[in-house]
Amino acid sequence: MASTGLRLRVFLVVVALLLGVAGVRAFQLQALDPQAFAAEAASKMQTTRDEPAIRGAITDRNGVVLAETEPGFKVTVDPDMIKTNGADKRYPMSRKKQEEAELAPGAVADILVEHLGGRKADYLEIFDRTNEKTGKRSRYEIVARQVPAHTFTQIQADMRAGLDGDGKRPLYGVFGESDPIRVYPNRSTGSNVVGFVNAEGKGASGLEYALQEQLAGVDGKSTYDRSTYGRIPLGTNIMVPAEDGVDYQLTLDSDLQWMTDQMLAEGIRNAKAKTGTAVAMNVHTGEILALSVLPTFDSSNPGAADPDDLGNRAVTQAYEPGSTQKVLTMAALADQGLVTPDTRVQVPPRIASGGGYVSDSYDHGTINLTARGILANSSNIGTIQLARQMEKGTLSQYLASFGLGSKSGSGLPGENAGSIPGKDMPDYTRDQISFGQGLSVNAVQMASAIASVVNGGTYHQPRIIKSATGADGKAVELPEPTSREVISEEASAMVVEMMEAVTMLDPDKRAIPGYRTAGKSGTAQRYDPKCKCYNGFTASYVGVAPAEDPQILVYVVLDQPTNGNLGSQLALPVVNQVLQIALPRYNVLPSTSEAPRKALTFE
Image (cartoon, rainbow, N blue to C red; front, side, top):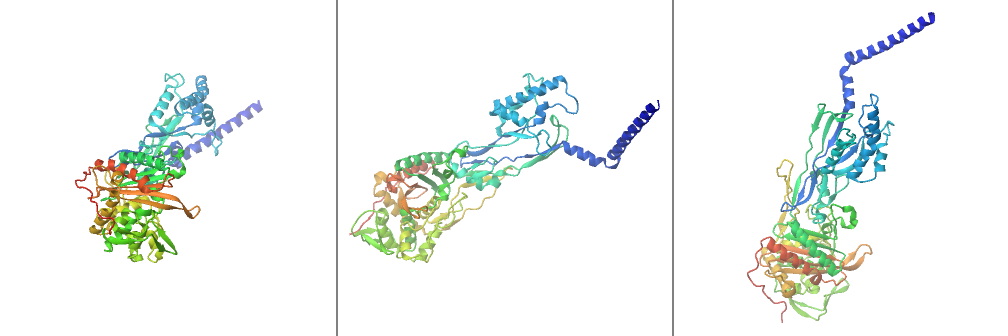
């Protein structure tokens, strides 16, 4: 009896102690610091997620979409919730809930396989993962990124339909977060300009890379209360909205771009060249209408491409231009008053230069050529003779004013500035650069330089971006393209006349129907940095029309052709094909006068 009384007293003491501890805890929670504890409890229920900004779109000059962002989701799972099918673990599960919990992982895995692909076993392995820090079953795993919105909607519908498909036993544990998808509707058209984004959604090449900060915008954040079953509708809901990215409109014409791609591809096949580049430009604005770089890639699937093709060789690849450089040499000489189209030069079979001799591409004795004839016949010797009248420093200054030797500022990333010799260049270097060797350029640089010669003498910084618009619909200010006078209108007219003589040397093959055209070919030995020697050729041609009032320029470069090497045979057909499409497309009226035939030689 005494032992029973003792046990009762001990029990009562224990109960009293427990009640005392509970009372102290209740007093602590309710009287001493209720707000702090309430905040701690609330914080355990709160979840914060990034709200991605919508990346700005990139369109062509006519509003055709080249890159845009579509709604998408990052699909995540709560393995712990899937394993219990959302049951409240604070209470024992009924037999029915236990049955649902056993069936749920397999059913959820089947839904994910149906809509996302993959293997059921892989999803089941994800559902078994534990948190490395706590050792408990994971509450958050990513199973797919950039899932189209309609696909995620189907997943949600199947989860609601549940185990039986009638919605009576829904499934829990699959969630979606905003994860926009970057799409390129025109795929490879303009891809070397537009570029692509990587798996993290950041620009990895082209304008996607160069304009990453502006296109990306600023992500927002959302904080909300979450229970076992997901977001609490009437709980905390704090939203910091995202600032969407800037939309850019380019100067490119996607239709002309596509057609230029096709014509350049044919030119590469005919020349059996390794690569090719084509630039179509408005000579009065510097706007690039087409910029074709082949081989190219599909912006939607850059991983399938050769890494060498992911850049933009039109600006990254520097080369010696060859005889198209003679256009710039003649422009400088004409502007200095040292040459007119009718200037007479007695051209010998070869000319001494730098301890050796320079010859022309064709054998001849001493011939009498006008400056017009020197350009039409692409005489290296005659060009050297004329260039020697000019101070080396003056020639170097002209080349710099034409935009050579420095980055053009077109907005295209990775540009190679090329190189031109300074005023202290050796005499033989002046000889070389006069006809296009001993200096290096990129295709956009060279097209811009020649455009400045034929448009009346004004250099316009090449442009690839036409306008920009913020998410609020207001115009975003862009850097103003620079322009400067490089030669006089008189000098410009003289050079265009000389270039038209190039066409009239063989009008049946070099002219295009309805338009007077002016042009110049280039065939240069190709410097190979691997062997530090000349290896192969670069063939090119530049054409402008109409010759009486130049509007559009097309410049084509074929690298390492093996089916011949003359620009007038390999690159000229591509130039003329593009011009025949571009001129009427931009409402350039046909010529109303005949191309003149003027003296190329003299007695």
